Length: 301
Image 1 (cartoon, helix red, strand yellow):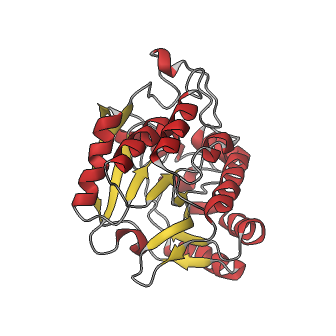
Image 2: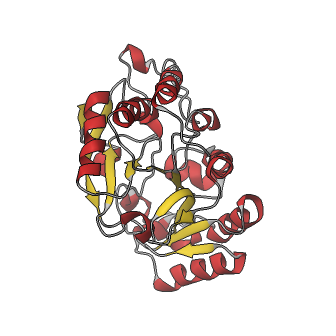
Image 3: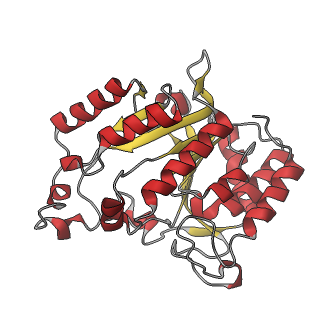
């Protein structure tokens, strides 16, 4: 994959903007006229909302390095996960509007601070604005790789416009079951969409490449948050990644689940009640073993 030049990045941004009215940027295809002032399902209109930005030392070692990953946290979200641990950002949309020039300035500031990459967190609903800003930042000398840190609910149509723009794709693969995705994220189409998105991401960038200094330079890294009661069906996800994407797929099998968001309302439900408790160590161990059995490349947090 060859990185595209600023003029082409700008053209991609314009093509992505056309998907905003009616909005069909993500698989939800909510149809909002975001360029005309309407808010999409994500709660965001024409302008991106930024919750915060800065060096982040909590990402995977190959991203955070020794000076941090240059994260830009976007407010709003195209999913509705009942257990979201960033509820204030995703659902309450706590953030401030940021123009393309302001977003570009953030990216350049992160580079000046010594960050190893530019990490767009929850970018799916703000891809046009971010890509427009990247064109400005590249013209002003930005050289860092771009990380697309997504929940995995991305459309192939939008992703194709990111080829040569994004260096490292880091999607979640949250749930295998459409019914679980419906009940926990309001998106029964999520599993199918995530599979299509991950295949497209792998096509563009290949398996994750890590340089001798330990830093990722390009490729695919899949995150999977293990849910209590195996509600995500982790083994199925890992088997699919190994068989259909690549046996060398890099995965982070995450144990950070804790009750948050709206999960307290599920305590009495026989099928979903496990979400009202923390993940047990043996549940995470079982998921790790499933990933090893599938032959995947397991990364640490």
